[in-house]
Amino acid sequence: MNDDSEDQSSNKSLNNKFELETSTTDTRTKHNENNDSFQASIKDILAGSFRGISQIVVGHPFDTVKVRLQTQKSITSSTTNIINNIKNQQQQQLKYSGLINCITKTFKEENILGFYKGSFSPIVGCSLYSSVLFFSWGRSKKIFEINENESSLIKLGSAGCLTGFIASFIEGPIDLIKSKMQVQYSINHNLNVITKQKNYHFERYKNSLDCIYKISSTHGIRGIFQGLTATICRNTIGTMFYFSSYEVIHQQFSVLLDTDSKSSTPLILLAGGISGLIFWVSIYHFDVVKSKMQTDHLTKSERKYRSMLHCFQSLYRENKIKGFYKGFSACLLRSIPTNGLSFLVYEYCRAKLNLVI
Image 1 (cartoon, rainbow, N blue to C red):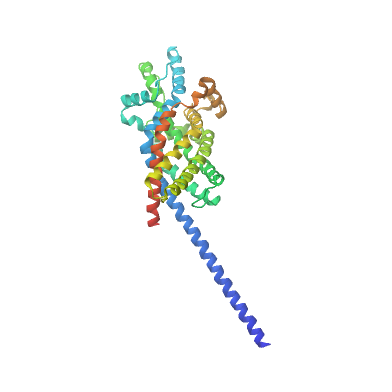
Image 2 (image 1 turned 90 degrees about the horizontal axis):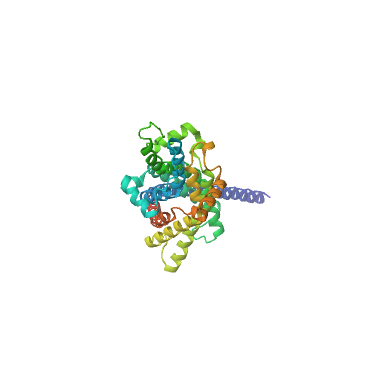
């Protein structure tokens, strides 16, 4: 009887000890997983920041040309309305006849610095945006349980959509300031000739910080998020294609070439360049609409476009399908080298951070 009681007590003690050890092991495992997740997030943020800076250094001149070609008609129209009120003049012709003309005129009138107008906002902001983009991508992959060799386009696409949606709330204000700075030249350039002697004042942004201050102080938080709907549509769709294509190209070519995709410079440049090209081909029409809406009047009642749908309708009515592809050649020239190099910077920084974090 006593022996049975002792055995039961011994078994109970062993069970308690086993449960305690199991609980301790689970706690340690959970702690390690949380720690690994935190470290991965830090790596994504830091590597993404460096990737964002490289993207601006390489791509901003192309982006300036793209935005100027996209928006020159609406800006010229707005300028003409002001000029008409002063001198009753007729509609002016477009400033640029095409890509090469835009590049040569910008360089002739504003030197190399003209291509980097509004770059302070994106070089700081794109670093922030890119860190949020890759942090969101990393977290989205966790949510949809995407592993290193994931080939499910549904999972990759869903994670890309979520990433683009989150990142839009950072990129929207950054793009707004950048676009306002990039296109203000045309308003002042056209007005200076006519209003030089007439004391006519047109508000001008001295720099990106001045632009942020003036927009936020006169139009509040709504002014900073002008064109957000178009930004969300563009990014949700575009990022879905962007990351999906990058991951798939990586996987397929690494198998085909029997190489480590994360350390192969040519493969990273190839995958990054192609994914950037796919991104812009898939959403360029949304980007044109976004640029039009962001460079429209800040006061809602004076805007040319009442909504994203109205902007689509107006562009099609004015120029048919061509209206959605202004500046497309500049964008394609920019997309391959910029995205190829920026992904290379990201993967390089990520690999180096793996050694120290």
